[in-house]
Length: 106
Image (tube, rainbow, N blue to C red; front, side, top):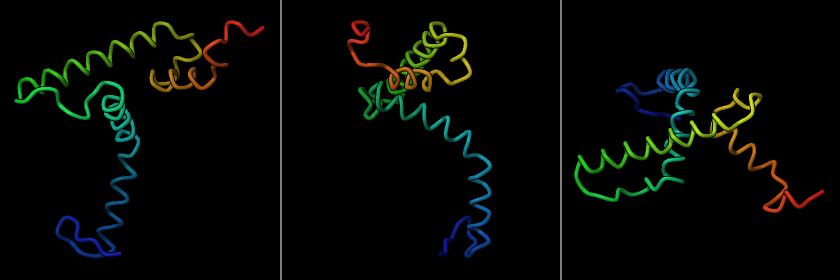
């Protein structure tokens, strides 16, 4: 497979690109997870307003709401779940529920 990356053709470029991606994949994964949550849960698939100032305001309000939600999750979670990120612990609890009527089960 040939790719003309950074102005250099060939396998050397692909090797450098793979090494670069491997070096930053953990950081990129955490950041992309946050952006995905913003798009999926906080309505950032499209901007509500036009203009740089209003769009910046929407992104800042979304980040504020996300941080509030993460803080709430951290404050209300048991101590053994604090080793996970806030979004992971929320997903983990949602998966382990017995359903919407779990308090009726004996």
